Length: 136
Image 1 (tube, rainbow, N blue to C red):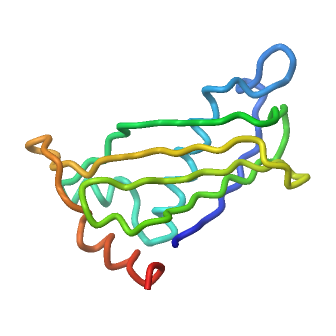
Image 2 (image 1 turned 180 degrees about the horizontal axis):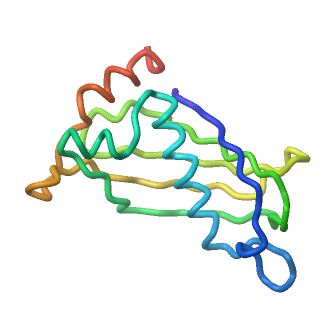
């Protein structure tokens, strides 16, 4: 299992009139955390694209348990429960506030696709090598 954490401070523009984070902003938090988790492995999305692979989102789920509020410092935990050996990678997210209360959970599936043909492909070898030690 590979896990990482990213912190994000809730900005005023992400909230509604009540100071509560608008639900769709959680998907942005998930994306920030996914990008940072890949960065912790030594890659960026741009690096993966240079390998000729793009990673479109194909499925998104989220469950909202408690509100996130303006100026909260959120911790987004991102977990890969399975080694992505085929054409997809599945990220699991948990969002916590500073009181360590679970605010939301998310599950995002992305496909690895050849940029030129838009056909599904397998996990880029370099990325797979970096992930394998977490699943031994």
